[in-house]
Image (tube, rainbow, N blue to C red):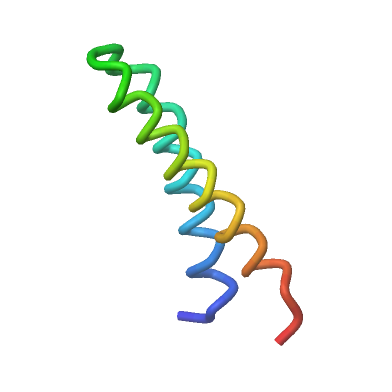
Length: 53
């Protein structure tokens, strides 16, 4: 697979982490963990997809 394709997949998985944080409204520490990691994975995934090779 191309690097850009894998980066887009990472970005989509990051978005899923953000959405899943609100689906399981348990402990607030888990909510913040899912949000922070999801935001970082989304940013770096889509950033990698738009980077010039």
